[in-house]
Amino acid sequence: MEKFETERLVLRPFQAKDAAGLFELLSHPRVHCFSADRLDSMEAAVADVARRNAAPVQLAVCLKQQDEMIGLMFAAMDEPDTYGLGWHLNTNYEGKGYASEAARALIDVLFTHKNARRIYAYVEDDNLRSQKLCERLGMRREGLFMEFISFVDNTDGTPRYENTCIYALLKKEWKSSR
Image 1 (cartoon, rainbow, N blue to C red):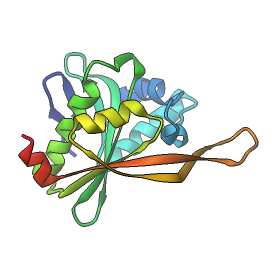
Image 2 (cartoon, rainbow, N blue to C red):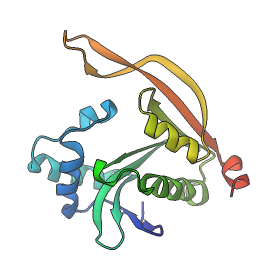
Image 3 (spheres, helix red, strand yellow):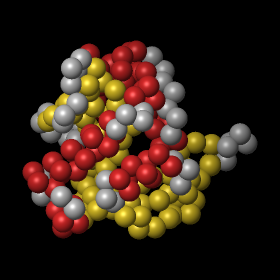
Image 4 (tube, rainbow, N blue to C red):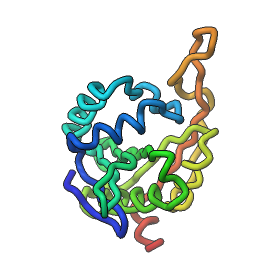
């Protein structure tokens, strides 16, 4: 996906210089769904940047003035016209509206340039910040999957299953809210 800008941010394909920011973001992921992406070294971060750069819709979220990576956004296409959306922001930049700004821009690109009809996001039921973000974006909560998926294990080695909310937004809803 090509780079695009918002008022304060640039969303662009990953670049080699993003390895340090990605390492800071993923060396200790707070949200369990990013546990599999955990990075243990700068070498792993460099390799992960290359992998993300080759992926269709993996974007570095960067401050426009410094071109400093502060988070990531991704979208996965479900044929023929639906996208799953996700984000992860460096904790040092939370509470400033960056996640909202970036997600709103990506949603707009998916609806206007990628012909998306429906966009959804899975959010763990204890991730209240992401749930509130979905609601600010105009997404509706469609349901709660009980013990839907496991990203981490309990101390006894058994899978810890996450209750997962699904939020979604249709193109016609997005258009009518604009």
